[in-house]
Amino acid sequence: MPSFKDIAELSDLYQSLPTFVNKLHQLLTRLELSLETYYADHISVRCFQKTTADRWRQGLMQCGELMSEKIINGRPICLFNLHEPLQVGSWRIDCVELPYPGDKLYPQEDWEHVEWVVLGDVENFHQTALALFSDDILLMPQLKLKFSNPAGEGERLPNPTLAVTDNGVTVKFHPYSIQEVVKSES
Image 1 (cartoon, rainbow, N blue to C red):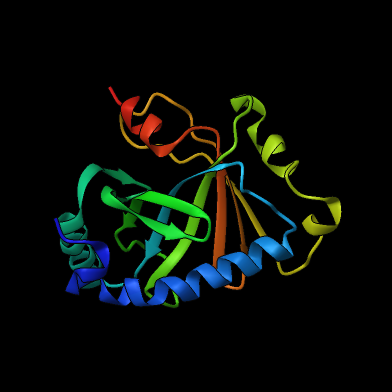
Image 2: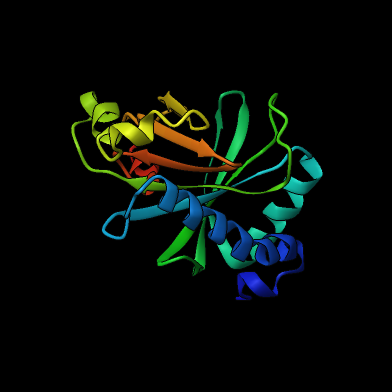
């Protein structure tokens, strides 16, 4: 099986990964977050052209296996388990999320976010996730906070999510790993 770095269809993502990791590290520093003890469950890309999504899909199929493909919020979202994890800062991440383009136009086609599992009561998850941040951090005017409850057809586990975005990089938190959510499907 070829490695992520050796696949022509993924060369743009491989080359931009160090820049993304640097921006991610800067964001975590600004947010005063140390997530070393948390499980980074997947990394996600964003694109605005279907041809880019198709090319990345072809590449990911060469270095991983399609774990799931669901329509979520009106567009296909694919999850790939990589045969060899990507090194993203101090985390080794073996799952890549590939959302196909939807109605929202993204400014670039590149890496967009990493998601971490934060264990806690699902009913109060948003408060649990917010507790990771100081009040001063939450009041930073440039931060965008978004609460959501994405769900694919047949998923039985709720997946409340907190997304925090600054400077084009997003960190997300949810109570279950994406693998657990996929396994919950009926």
